[in-house]
Image (cartoon, rainbow, N blue to C red; front, top):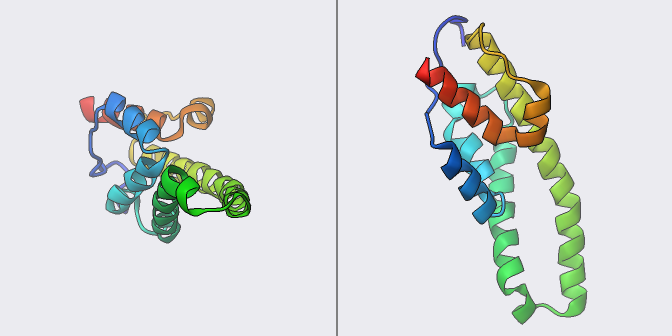
Length: 138
């Protein structure tokens, strides 16, 4: 991070694959997207410990949503759903906080890169991966 004009060791990934994996895995891939790029973005910029916590939460939530009807009563399902709603808001907050930190890192290292806030809000990681792919092409 000391070299403002230097390039980041960012991985070029197929954007279609990122979108499909995000949707099919119900957001689990988003956590892994951030965790796999930990060294490139810098440890102090993004709360990667929280991404580890949310990766575990998302996996457990996905499993419970798949097989929860078999093991849970209606009261248990209601409690799990309440917890999911609360944690979903924290997840969205973490997602956007991290996305905007990545925006700052990209713009710091690539002075000519302009990451538009509106597109970042609408498409978060997908837009970031699009910009990273564009930077890697140039």
